[in-house]
Amino acid sequence: MSEMKRVLRIRDGLAITVGIVIGAGILRTPGLIAEYLGNGWLILSVWVLGGVVAALSTLVLAEMAAALPKAGGKYVYAREAFGPVAGFVAGWSELLVSRAFSGAIKAVAIAEYIIILVGSGSVRLLAVGVVVGYVILHLGGLKVGTTFQNITTAIKVAVLLAIAAAGIAAGDGSGLIAPPTVEHASLLGFALAYQSVAFAYYGWEDAAKMAEEIRDPGRSLPRILIGGAIAVAVLYLMVNTAYLAALTPQEMAGSELVARDAVQGVFGNTAATFVVVASLLILISSGNVNFLGMPRVAFGLARSGLAPKIFQYISPRGTPVAGLFLIGTVILVLASTGALEFLIQFMMLVAISVDLMVLSAFFRLRRTRPELERPLRVPGGVWTAGVTIVLYLLILGIIVGTQPGLAVGALVILGGLGVAGVATARYSNG
Image 1 (tube, rainbow, N blue to C red):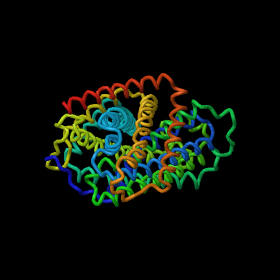
Image 2 (tube, helix red, strand yellow):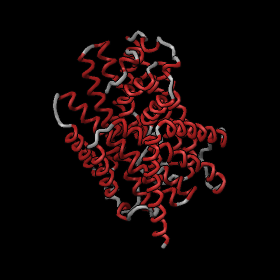
Image 3 (cartoon, rainbow, N blue to C red):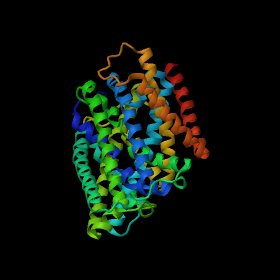
Image 4 (cartoon, rainbow, N blue to C red):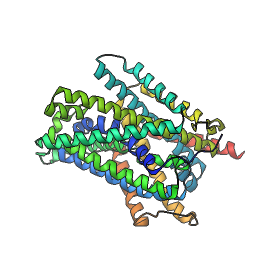
């Protein structure tokens, strides 16, 4: 079987978007960001910037997604605009870097939170068990995976809203008393903080990978993408305001779970334990979508001749089995490193670079494929897309300029994928 079933509704797509975006980022990165910036207003500012970039990116991507509703998401738009090599780089960088790294971070975090609850255990062994559990779940088929996602997403949104309300109501605003000063500002601090924020927002476009399984994609997909991005941005700002209402940036700095610290300081240990359990559920929901969306990128790559044909096989229950085993294996290997900050920084440098290429496809598709039916057109047209590209260029320039060693590593990976893409394209044409 090599055809996908259109079974996903708008609410399923929103659950997938919110499910993968809200997870390890909002739980794990606030302590890192507080350490990088050291001021409450700067912390909120970088979260606002991340939301603006995500919203603009979503608008640009939504037009392409509605015009080209095919499984695979970003790689489809890169391939249609710039050819098979660009499609290969976009697709495989997501599989092997962006989503594999984020899946590994989530698996390790789940293992850490289990240990916090039970008091002992091996992070590596538990992380392996988490990955194996996800693979088994998704072998049950798409319907099983999306039902699980809808339930856990509803739980996570309710929990984060409760944490936000409690922190804002009971806190004294101590984290927002001091105004930002020159001593708090540095380009490296901004770059590291933005990479963490971008990681927390990453996944805003994930529903596009499942375009061939969404009912009426031309109408539904833009609503899913834009609605999901707005919902996440609002929730993130509420939660970070709550953190800063209860804690100072110095108290947040370095914490592995700021939500627990904020609630513990106001409501005590029982409430803190509840937050750990809730955080575990949030991570489980978020990690689930890595295994839901990424096998379908492998499916799309294979169908376009950019991956072995075995990745086209869909089980009778609707699962791209080979892609599921591939992403499971890569995540399993990465999870054993435990280098959280490096994984976030490297992942986001590669992801931002690839996203810049993908979003640039908007201009080329407007010029070379004017005949495409576009159920949604970007408000502001090329001006909105142009502002988005300029923001990406500025942010990428700061990251590369402040972290040249990381940039060299990212260049090696992307260059290697480019060479592999050229070889694959020649083989397919030969």
